[in-house]
Image 1 (tube, helix red, strand yellow):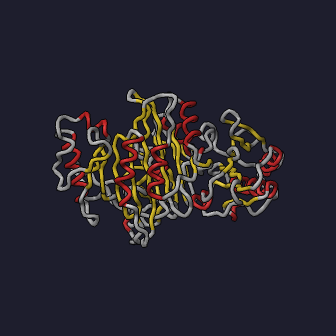
Image 2 (cartoon, helix red, strand yellow):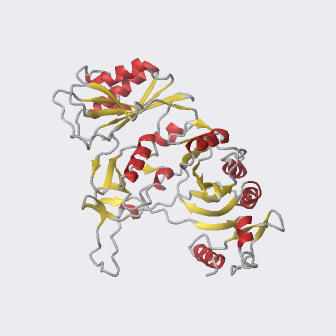
Image 3 (cartoon, rainbow, N blue to C red):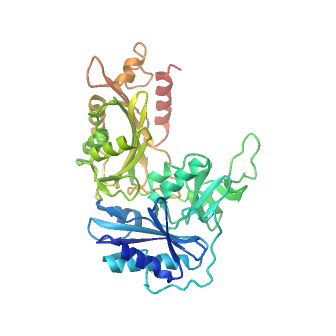
Length: 472
C-alpha cells in the first residue's frame, strides 16, 4: 500500500487549510513541525509522528505530474503538496489520504492516488501505537540499521523528491547506504538511478518468484546482516563469487524505443560574469530546436528554465556544490542532472543528459558534431561521451535489463588537446581520424567511434582510444 499522498491544487493551501487537513485524525492528535519549521507533522499524544507534510510547491512546468504520477493536474501553475504516512501504523495512510482530500476540496484540486483520498471524514485513531523514537524521528525512513536506511515506495515513478533527497543526504552524512524498496510495477527517475551507485545503496524490487532483487543489476537479494545484499549462486566459488539473477529482470520485450545519452563536463573561469547552464541550453536547442522547459533542485522540476536563477542559486550555495534537475517539454522527453562545484580549475558543471525517441523517430545524430563544436568554442568543454541506447522513450528506468549504450563519439576539449604531448591527441589507433572543432591552431577533437550498434565493439574502440590518450 502506498505511503505517499499528494494534493494537486489550483490555489495555494493556506495555513488554515493545512491545519484543517492535519486535524483529519481528530483533535486528540497534535500538530508539530520539524526541519526548521519546513515540515509539518501530525503526531500522536506522545509526540511520535503519524503523517509528515512537505511545504506546498508551486509547479510552473507542464508535464511533471503526468511524468511522475500519471495524474492529470490543474493547468500550470498549480500547487503540489506531499504527505507521507509513517510505515507500520494502520491508520496513518488513511490520515494522509484524508488530509489530501480535505486540502484538495479546500484549495480546488484533486488528490493522488484517487483511491487513497476518497473521504474527508475524521479518521479514528484510538489506541494508535507507532514505532518508538528514534526510528520514527526521520519520517522518510522506514527501517534504520547501522548499515543502511530503508525507504518503502509504491509510486509509479520513484523521483528525486525533496524528502528523498534529504534522506540520501542524511544517510550519506551518517555513512549509511540508502535502499529503496518498491513493487515490480515501479520505475525510477534517472535522477534517482544516478544517486544509487555507491554501495550498499540499491534499488530493491519485491518479486513473487525470487523474493527480492536489485532493480539495476538483477541480483537476487536477501535481508542479511542489517541490509539487503546479494546471495551467492549454488555454483559460486571464492574466485568466482557470482550471484543468481532474477527471472523477472531478464524478461525483456523489444519496443524499438531508444535514448540518446550524453555526458559532458565543462570548466569555466570563476568570475562575476559567469552564467551557468549555457552549455546545456545550447546542446538542448541543437538537438530539439527548443530550450529546456524547466528546472528544480528536486523533482518535480517546478521552475521555468532560467540560467540566471541557476547561477544565483549556485553562488548562494558556494563553496558547497549545487545539484539540479532539468526537464524538457512533454512532446520531446528530455531529462538532465547537473552538478556544479567549485574546484582549483574553476567552476565545473558535470551534466548527464538523455532524450527519448519512438521507434519511428530518428535521433538527430547529424547535429552532434555542431553541438559539440559550440560547447567546445563557447562553453569551455572539457570532455563529452555520446551514446545510443535501446531504452524507454519516457526515460523512466524499469526493473528490467536494458543493456548498455553504444558509444557513438567522444569529444576532447581544446585545453585538454593542448596539454597532450606531441600529436598524440590527433594520431589515434582508430580507423577514423578525429574531426577538428573550432580553431585550427587550438582545436577540440571529435572522435567518431565506428562500433557496430548491434554489438559492443564500440566499447572496445572507446577503451582503445582512452588508453591511447592516457599514453598507456
